[in-house]
Amino acid sequence: PFGICVKLSLPSVFCPSKRNAQWAVEIAERASVRTASQSTSWFEASPAPGASPLCPAEPPSPASALHDHAVIVGYGRVGSAIGEAFAASHLPYVAIDQDQARVDAMQEHHVPVLFGDGARPEVLGRAAIEHARLLVIAAPDPYQTRAIMEHARELNPTIPTIARAQSEEERSYLEREGGAIAFIGERELAFGMAHHALMTMGRDDDEADRAVDVVRRPS
Image (cartoon, rainbow, N blue to C red; front, top):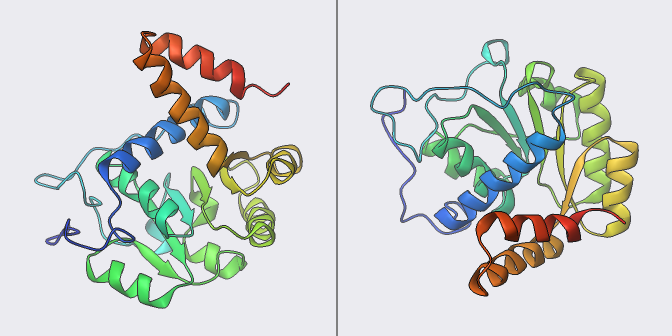
């Protein structure tokens, strides 16, 4: 178990807010329902004794020791929010990022981040993608996203995938051709704002969820 946790005084790019972490957990939970045909259950893990809920329970492990974990490609503001959500929920994950300074900073705090291009099969192999239960692509480049999905599916053909999209066209392509669950930042922001607006106007949480799901559902 770690002896050091990520300090809350880190810059926001490295330590996202609890609100962002809760948002990431909600998205992951929604996506897990939509990928139920590929994976019968969500992650099951328990914290190590004395482990902080804001820190991963275990340090980065050799690829041979990783199983039933999530692989997060891209550990900027989006990816790190999702990573913090996993850590807070005591779910195993490994992240990949191409920013050496970011990786060094995270590794100093024992965050399981690997340096490399997630579109390269050997880098995905270092993250034990073949034994992973979920792939999260938080990198913003659409061409890199497609390459990551292609190589990941070669190593783990049935892995459920959550991806970041920049447009409706890209979202449709990723869901149609890659079998991913894709999210557009502005679209999800609109759904979140609509949900809170509906509750402020007197609807309860379930009613707000149902209303947003009607809008979310493809026509």
